[in-house]
Image (tube, rainbow over all chains, first blue to last red):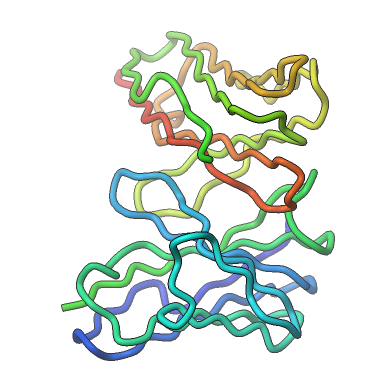
Length: 119
Length: 109
């Protein structure tokens, strides 16, 4: 199956600093990637849709200026959590599909996830 | 709006069966099922595309009702490895996957 790699697996940062998380499709090109956030014992909540070469589309309630998404190439999307605070501590995970576009009618492949802890 | 799953949690002995339901307020284009172990990425189980479709995967199968607003996941003769949290993922034609509320399944020897 297709491989999506996410880095880092975990990160601890100080309150007020910024953290960048990378999501790479290793063996396919992804024009669209998705970023999810998951709090302990909760479901995966879609944060935004990352579009190669254009602006990301954010879900309602997600702060665009706080969660910066860049999709500069067909294999890489980055999520930057700016001015992180303890309430941003969560499990962040990306997904992509090798069949172009989004996940309509196709399996979504997930990165390993990044556990962010803000102290 | 997030699909609602029931039950929220299930406890089984090895060999027992379980049914997990996923319900949406809207008609769906497709339903995905995933299993997630603690701290790991979700693992794809299956996808159903058509109303009335049923699909099987070893001892795990699923159905997608005719009105395309509900899906059920059937786990038969459960094994210890089935433990985890099960999520349905639904698409309403927006080309993005919205996950259900989740069902935590624990299988004991």
